[in-house]
Image 1 (cartoon, rainbow, N blue to C red):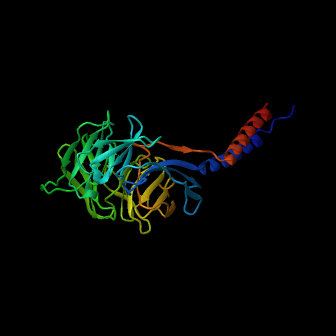
Image 2: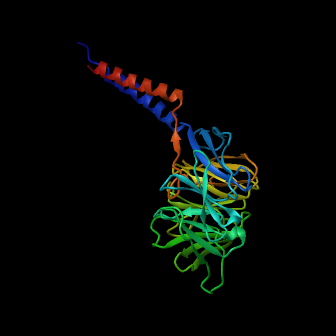
Image 3: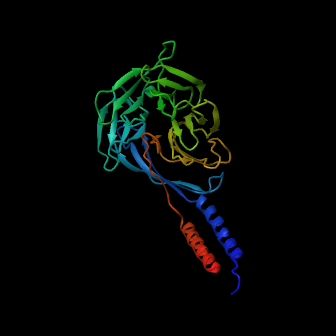
Length: 346
């Protein structure tokens, strides 16, 4: 009986697995996005499926947002999140004084009294209330509205500096490790310019970390990097929530970046009020402003406003990956190679 050529078998399997690993890295990313447009009273709550095929490096691959499907027509629409208790969308009602709870399957909605004009919205980590900021309407108040169960009397508070001077709140975001009852805040217009810091939600006292910065409007916590990603004007900033250090920044065209989402795997989707959909794949660099990232920044829809979060409190959690046929074929070859190597050894 001749000695089996186990070295050749191992080489065959190793080669196939290396090829398969490379193909798996290029597996397309398909993401369902829920978003709003700011034409209150017309079609303003939407969803689409966006696909990226590539390896995440600059110039490699293609990003393709699908055709948008209208879900609902509400009297006003701005910020958007998911109520984790009943899987309904929660939409800031702009100047209506309401937050609208929308059934994503049939577009039916009910109004929740916000006690003020609410724009960008955030679900509290305890899933009991949704927070709303009023800065886009000029208010210096912010609100919390019960969502478990939905409805009930809202709690409206005034945000203020240590000096007592009032300050408007645009967006609230929670990060792991924060003291209970506190959140990060932004205070600034879509075009940029304002402050970012922390707020005591019980007293309304804000503590600025950065002032007069362009990135002071939209904000998300990104579990992929452990950082906050903040937007305003045409700038995104990545900030460490523990040290307050600015990790990375990036400028993207002449956009008016409003609110966006991350999927927890290094993919970012951000809405520009001029209609662009900004997509950044930073899965390799972990730096939002790296020139090595794949970036797509093209017109998608007029009056584009906010994307619902994909992960975390209020996240729609619709991220999926679909293997390419070529990848599936390589998997079959890999298994065949393993089987061949076992037979050779026998």
